[in-house]
Image (cartoon, rainbow, N blue to C red):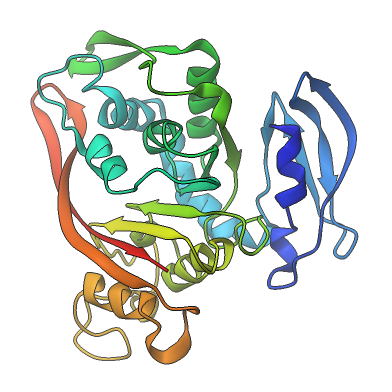
Length: 313
């Protein structure tokens, strides 16, 4: 974890109070903290740093962690690595979804956030546009893979073909990506461990329907993003599931209630400041959709349409 990031960190367990964390017993290699721990002087929670990875998950995130555990399996990780990077490895079945999403955000000064970064593709894309990028995910396996890619500048991974047959894909780090300008942290997108107004640009791709409290994620994304000269990219397929969250907590897909109707419309009016939940309000600049895939094996894919909103304030 980059040393300079400590100035932006707060205790996720104490939110909405923004309490600075104290670093102790740290061992660094150059500008990177390799081991140590952060402690909160208010609630006494401790957050470890090991192998260069900071785990800033609040104790209250137990439900989210149980959901995230399904993304730790080797087959799931392989599917997401393929989804993020197969186009760079020359796989003809891959989509260019992540480069399409990245193209929606213009270059700017400041730090960018990729909330729910998974294998890290969008975060890497954004290093060509911002001073620094932070990717956050609750899966330690995803974060470890993303960090290894940033260090090695290449990635080899195997994907299932049929039954026990597998093949290996390899790609090199594109020259436009700048690995020195990205870091990845384990944390819950429903209680982000960053100060208010930390990020000039923030992105949330395909995560809001994967957390128990979708509205909390949207509010947190807004809190940590600057109040002016800022942009936000939100995209999701709105695959609401009773296994992830209660229907009362969904932001759409309902016949009645405060979030009746379609998720994309409800997120739009939330960002626009209606009901005062998100403040200051955002101006919607563009709406659309991006198609992307998850791969199970050579003959089985999941094709997903993710609806997006790009906004500024």
